[in-house]
Length: 486
Image (cartoon, rainbow, N blue to C red; front, top):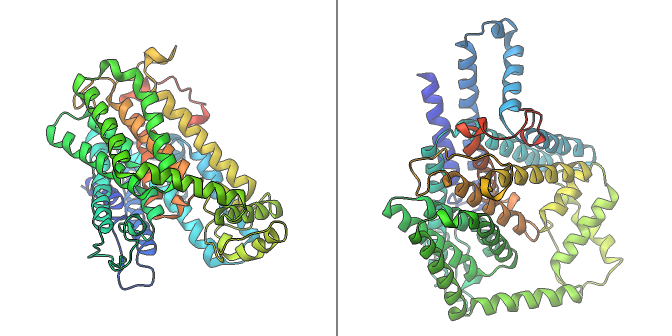
């Protein structure tokens, strides 16, 4: 009974995380958007993790191996940690990332800012572990993805309402201002760039689920979500999310192409219709022209050294040069920005007006600056391992010599037996590509909804294989670095 209750709490906590984190606001506080979402996600992760610990403890108590209990509480704790490392891929780079954040404290000058950042790193790591170890079947995977898509769709609908000057909930839009449009399309976040960066994980996920769904109602929902969310991203026309979206679709098509012969003709027609609709809508509304104009504008600013982002990136570079090993301290970029910015201004002319920066608008540079070389090695190790793992699963047997056939863990529910799980993995992987591209010119991992979704997609890529019979057929040796200690 206790185990079932714990499973229920864990699963629905995860559902609430992906569904409500993007929608939570606090209209009475100074920070209406970011802080409430972050706190809500933290609370739900702690609730889910506490339930999981109770479940693991209960399983240890009823285990047929009594020697575990003879070692006392310390023995049980060590066995739980060993179990997590053994069954959860990527734990080595994740552990290194946590250690890098702790090691960077030697250069931190603000315990409060550093503690907040370390807490997020640890809790997001726990979220990954929770999903991998507790999302075990097709229904759970789909419900989690559909819940996230519902939240993304609701956000997109509200963005559309804001685009036309209405804002009955967040009250951030002033209809009297002439620049309503995309400049005030913030959804339930505080910035068009941020909401666009949050939405870019959805299109390829919606597309993959559209291709594998059998129910007409679900196909209509996935198609509508895909069209609406992508339209909002194009309408906002923020540069790095647009590049991320393009890269995601490109990756998706590359890995779906081998599956096209086995897809029904209706699915192929759907893909063609989606392509025609987006290209036509882009040219008719003039949004493609706006994207090209924005690219030209930013290029000219980089040329004359007046780009705000160029200043922030060079400032991060100064931090890296000053503290290359341990970094300036996790969470300290905003604290030490002015100190290092002045060093940059001594070297280059700057004609912009930017006087503050809480983030460097490049997650990789900021992580390198705050956590040093150890931190950037950890994150690159994690990214490389993830894509090596996902690509191995996404490529069909006929496309890679020696790759074993991967049966679908969702078999019987999808349109195409044997390729369903691969299409879902491609959709998740493409969404991760989108957010990683966006991270070059923004800070999605400092925004709770984007960070949560990225972690969930990475975890579901693993969960689709670890929790199914697939893992027994994969040609991954037990010593493979792709699966940590497994």
